[in-house]
Image (cartoon, rainbow, N blue to C red):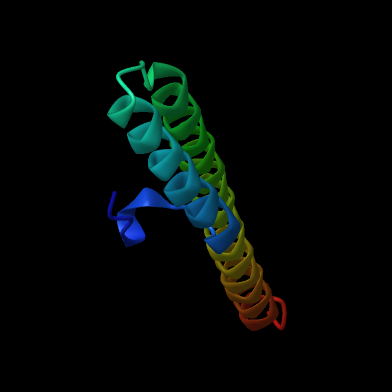
Length: 89
């Protein structure tokens, strides 16, 4: 079972997936079902995908907060400049 960068798994999870896939193949070679190993692999991949989605959403929120902060800073600076120019009248 090839694991690529799109699977969002860390090295420990990748090793576990490879181990479970090997156990599944051994079990199936004996004529038994390897369904429970498939479920474990799917759960690992699902957990990794959820974790990566959470990381992406947190990163997006942090970037948006930075943009909002920069915008507020520029707005306050512009308001300060505008009030300073008109206050000498």
